[in-house]
Amino acid sequence: MGRKTANLEALQAKIGYQFGDQSLLKLALTHRSLAGGPQENNERLEFLGDAVLQLTVSKYLYEKYPRLPEGELAKKRSLLVRESAVASVAKELELNKYLMVGRGELQAQAQERDSLLCDAMEAVYGAIYLDGGFEAARQVILRNLPDWDWEELQLIDAKSTLQEYFQRIAKETPDYELISEEGPDHAKSFVVEVSFAGEVLGRGRGPTKKEAEQEAARQALLALDVQA
Image (cartoon, rainbow, N blue to C red):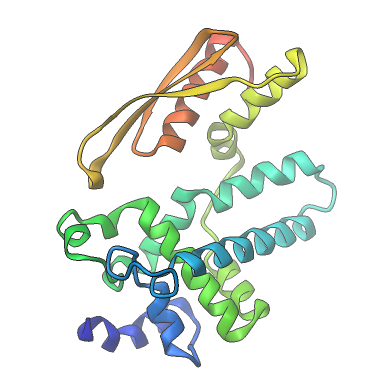
């Protein structure tokens, strides 16, 4: 614990923000497995930081693409705020080295999981917001936006495309069912099926349930010959 606290100066240099209240940063880096109370771990900060991230990216895209309709802006935003994208920012900042987790999580290398890294990164954004205000958080978020391109967006957003397709032709949405969950906590594998009106359209596998759903949606789009 003491070693990580001493290194927080290095982390702040990487983030590009110096905290006035160091306890906020420590809280943002504290996983619930180490401190269970709602005021002792980073879950409340994660809740706040997620909202700050969503607003920052929404405003950024609104100003950057003045002619894009709402649906296209939403697709671009989903790419920039998805779990794997936020986790990639955390990895660039080597946030895993500073996370404080319980003994069991540490042994399972939980601090390397995208889900935990994403949550911690959002908690850091929430902490910056509380410490320095929205503008400070906005600058940090924009400085660390992940790289993306339109082709990647089309692949990632298969689930939304499939939903829009069925809403257009049937005014209903497809159903996703978790078929299996395998492996240890730090190396999970999920299998999901997507169906409509009782007919299975696609099956996907991924390291998270969300990514398995996206893969299932991609398979369904291929089967239906629908362009993503």
